[in-house]
Image 1 (cartoon, rainbow, N blue to C red):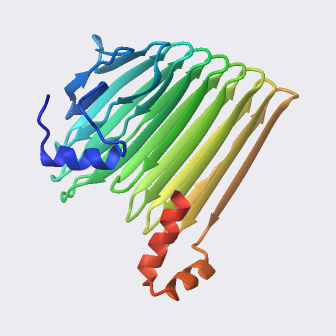
Image 2: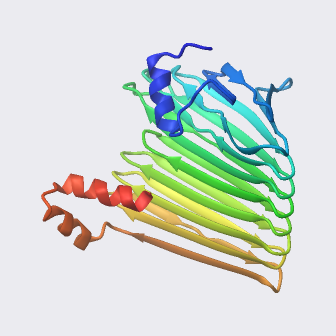
Image 3: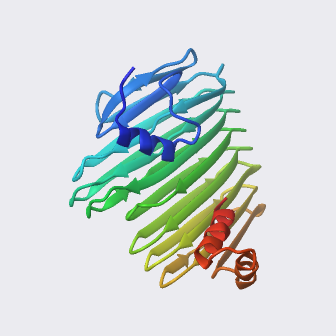
Length: 308
């Protein structure tokens, strides 16, 4: 069992709410290397031979198990690129808990690019949780650029739950999803930016199978002079249903752009997009202030409820 330092333990508490433990199936990546890892009876993790990263094999007998694969970067000036592939067998039910935390105490940029690809077989059910977090007293930027590729076979279910908590100076998210017959997709994206941070989220969902469905919800808060751009694209190539919803709270001098794109290529493709950007509700703010809260405390309560 590997001994973890205080910074690593602190970051793990932020990005893994379930609690990272060195048991079952797990892999902890620290400053570009696998610090520790383990397998379970039904889940095997193997190091890639041709490039940095791991292959995770989840067999069809997996029911209700969790896989923990957090990443911690606390070396200033480091760029960590990793390629992780997940092979989920027919009928498996699994939760994959990922996330990356960057602690930068130096003056150089620290960056993590995680390229994750999910190969989800017929009837499998996957929940993927990913949290991003940054801290550290240094002036160097904390940059996270995740790429998520999801390939869903017939009647599979995939839940994508992502959150950027705080402290990330720049992020560009690229999400690409291909759906087969009867596949069901659920996406919840939560994001908060502040100061001069920037965030771009591009998502493309190709609904290729008859009866496939997608529900995508994005919620964000932009503070300070931060900038956010959302570009969700839903493409119906068969009889399918999709609902895309983007809601944002804008504060101070921030900027938020929502660029929806829906594309129906089949007579029975039904796709809906909703987008709303606005300030904090004044009535809610006044009500909380009358309960004895300061303006800052009231704003914090409203934002927490909005994101959660």
